[in-house]
Length: 304
Image (tube, rainbow, N blue to C red; front, side, top):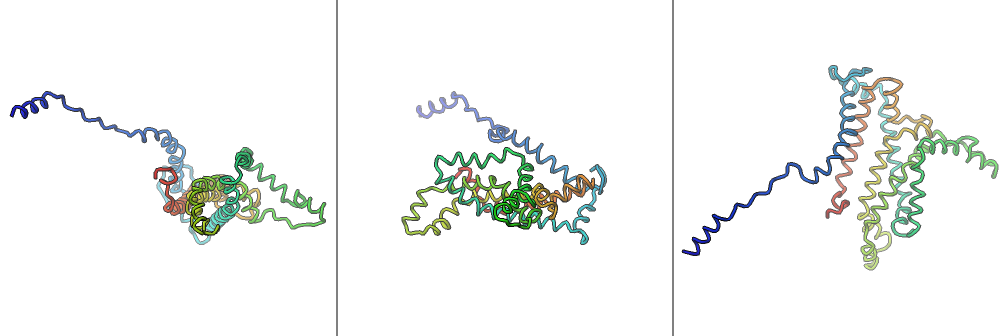
């Protein structure tokens, strides 16, 4: 009894333990506030403004009137052929992604596993064109492909050949996209291939797998996150490209971004341009979200 009474007395004398105060904001949220503020100012606010303008009266410059669907009716009217611009933009972007995947894989594999101490120099050479304006580089290719230009003049002087100019054609537009967006596909692929443990590849070979089987069943699945990120980045940039079509294509093919530019500038129809922008954002965003369903971001970020 004495022992029990002493324990009770000691408990009553001991000061109560303070409960830890719950923080209103977690440290992760506080650290992310600058990025969230930047996204809200630079992305969310313009998106809200463009969406509001898409419901304004055609050829007006205010969003405070009664909302209307007239701009979307104009886009989806049978007489309007703007859907062709959407199709051209999506086709060009898809072709650029496929060609870049085939072109960049050998280079990415070399940068990740073969080139060794030369990898930094090759990386610098691939990044250096990004320091020059895209328009300047594209006009350089115009001088290369134009009639009596660098290519045509060289073939005439050396071999007496005269080729038909391929400038201002769809293949040259795709070529321009492949040239401009090559780094955006290449470096995510290098990251993806760097994530593949060499021990796993060697183990597959020791177990009797051929080089093709090792690539298809080991390297490709493990490197797929980098491939998908590069493909998405390239696709989104290529869909929004306009310089390649105007400079190399000579407006022989009208892409959707060119229609948006015309609506906002020469036509002075901001609501129509806003409606086209909203539809383009919705289409591209839906495609990206569908692809992201198959992307394991936790593995990429090293959380598991």
